[in-house]
Length: 335
Image (cartoon, rainbow, N blue to C red; front, side, top):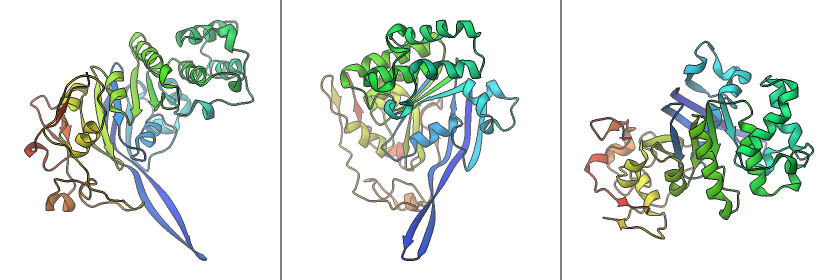
């Protein structure tokens, strides 16, 4: 299990005013509490710039958090797990968003797949080629057609599959996919998502999928969880179908009602239209981060930060909103 407690990441923003430089600190991720089992799938949903990728990179050990604690049960003997990158690589692997930037253009696929196998001593030297062939077949590629090619000789879909295969070289326990189909042709997205679901199910991998699309979130996290982020904060989390059918936070409702429906039934009591508001970088609201845009805002929302509370007796569906229990539910059937 991966357990995240009060995880925060702050960045320093520099602005030049003539010969002066003004520095401001802003929180890209703020006080995130999250637990994630190895055999579970979870989708992190939110708009661009809300901190989804930063959260994923902290969990993968790529960047160091400003504060907070990350505990992985499989590596409980490590006191400072975030600084043990080699150990983290064997546990958690990140599939980056851009397959074009993720692959070194001057190296062949063979060299990029074989290096981690050698460095971490995953197999004997004479077994490396067989292992690479196995990984490529796992993602739907033929080794003899791609191993000796360079990234520019491959299509976007092939590059994305290579990136997935490289993430599997170390047999990780957890996979974090950061918008892994956003730069792939629409006709190939479903097949790549199916492969990722099958791999995570067959290998019992914990899969975290970062996306801004609720349709992708529902497909990849069926039977799992959805967590919604806004301005670096986690605002709602619960079982996938519960979040989609009974969203309680106004921001979650606004995102779901904005999803176009091509088939299926839509049961909509009212449309949620967030107010237009531009939050300045470095501005950290005292109360609810969504208060300036919320159509249901109350005075307490601007003064006091909401805490998570459960909406069911099993305490699975949780929301950080002062007015969550007193508002009409919007439900949408994605068909």
